[in-house]
Amino acid sequence: MKKSLKIGLIGLLLVGVAGYFGYRYVYHSERRDVQKETAVFTLKALDLHQAFVANTEKANATYLEKATEVSGTVTAVEGTQLLLDKKVVCISQAPLSVQVGAIITVKGRVIGYDDFLDEIKMDQCTLIP
Image (tube, rainbow, N blue to C red; front, side):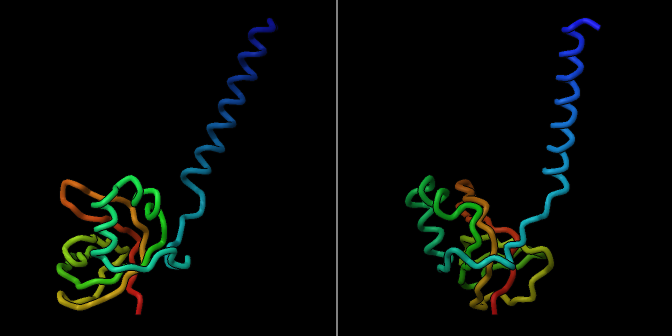
């Protein structure tokens, strides 16, 4: 066999092996469970919103992807989503049984700020008793 053909086959084999392990890592790795984590931050919904409005880049660096407890007044409930103080959207895995007007605390992961809707988005939210 020619030397260039051997090098090509070895390179192709290495790319295939790397692709396989990359696929396994992305699609079959253990999912993060925010409910088992200790909250890094505990604050009010309006304070979290104000942090993002004041300086989005700094707030992203501080809060993004962190387990956070947020408290506030429920202003809307729809299926698996609820809205705290008209500023923080909390998405859960299952419907949350809360009433509009209730003051609650949820724990979840901050996933970003939607400046168009002027809302903070959180997922994996659960009620904190």
